Image (cartoon, rainbow, N blue to C red; front, top):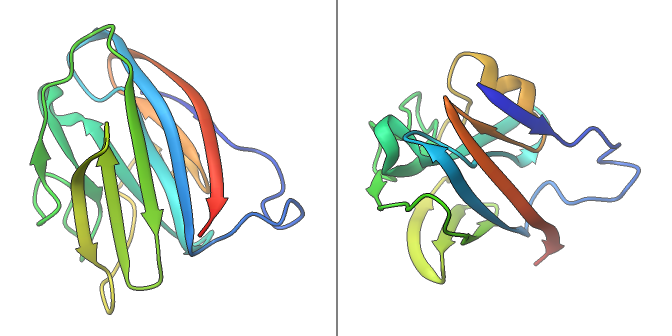
Length: 150
């Protein structure tokens, strides 16, 4: 696994923990697995999840973890074909009671998180907290990362 992590002082920069949108562009350069999995906070540094992008062999999209179920096992699981070399636009909206994700303007995830347990999948992904991107046996590129209050 390869990744990058935001190392600035979230609090000092007055970045939001909730009620924000995170947008970015990403592409898989080569490989067949996740290339832009994004870990982000949902209310604080100790409550983060990951948007899996291209996991489990290349096409899975979803949120890890909700109620201890990773993206391949919970109701956020979706499938999308990702072509190597193609840039994709992502938008994540984090609100108190729900998470929404769009890819290239199309809705991909819309899930209520009210009363749900949110966590990270066990393993190295926790090194991406509070905000980071990771790839698995894949070369990926990320650009145009923006955090905006809603």
